[in-house]
Length: 221
Ligand code: DC
Image (tube, rainbow, N blue to C red; front, side, top):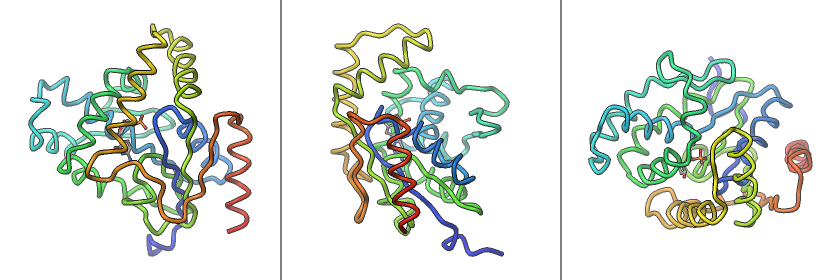
C-alpha cells in the first residue's frame, strides 16, 4: 500500500472569492489529481445544521453534524446523502454561517480526518484556508492565492448575478470584509500564508495566468 505522505499534495489557500476554487479545479484537471474543496465541507455542515434545526450556538451539536456529514463528491457534484446541494451551499447566507462555525475548534476537529482521506494517488489539490498550515503541512507545493477586496467583491457579484441570485455591491463588500476578518483573526487555524507558500495576487491576473504560474512552480519543484 502507498504511504499517504508520499502522495503529492498542492495546497491552495486564500480568502473568499480569490478565485481559489476555479484555479484549484483547473490545476487538478491539468495534473489528473483529485480535488478537495474543503470550504464545501464547512458549507455542508452549515446547511445540514440549519436544515436539522440544530442550535447554531451549540458547538458540540455542530461538531456532531460535521462528524456524521453524509457528504459525497461525485462527478463534480456535491451531495448531502443523495441530494445535489452544489447550488444551495453557494448561497451567501450559507457561506457566512460556514465562516462562523469554522471558528469552532470541535467542528474543525470533526472534519480533520475526513480531509486527510482525500490524499489519494496520483495526487491531490487541496483548496481552503488551512490546507498548507494545518491539514497538509508537508505538502510539496503551497500557494497562497489572494486578490484585493474590490476585485473579489466584483467577481463574487458577477458569479451571483450569473447564477440568478440577487446581489448588492455594498453588502457584498461588507460581507467579504467581515468574513476575511473572522477567517484571519480566529484563534484556531487562522487564514495566514503557510511557511514556504508562494503568494499569488490575482487582482490583475486571469484564471489562465494564475494556473500557468502554479504549473510553473510545480514543474520547478
Ligand atoms: O472557501 P469557502 O468560501 O467555500 O469557505 C467557506 C467558509 O469555510 C470560509 O469562510 C471559512 C471556512 N473554511 C475554513 O475555515 N477552512 C477551510 N479549510 C475552508 C473553509
